[in-house]
Length: 102
Image 1 (cartoon, rainbow, N blue to C red):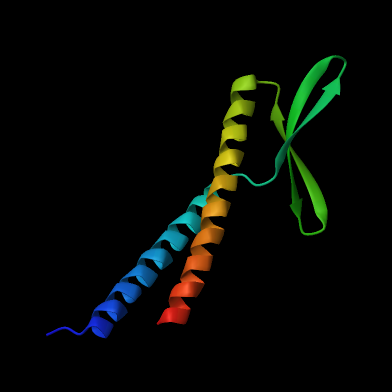
Image 2 (cartoon, one colour):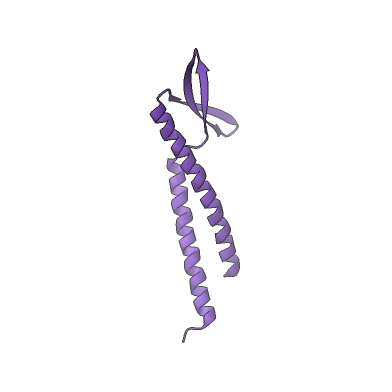
């Protein structure tokens, strides 16, 4: 007969492994997504878009273009990255709790 403590230990262990897998998947997804923010610069009534991010102490501006479709695609990717970062932080908190339990 399986004791309650053994069953709880098994559940917590499975949950820890699930969280670890999800953390790994989210970290891999972040590698494929751009970091930073979109910045618009106006020159002679034309708007040019740049992806701006930090690399060490430097601020890097990568030209995206004037194409609204490409700009929107980058904007969606940045939003997805922010969402994944929030999920990743929550998972790390859950993982810490699971480690404390067992």
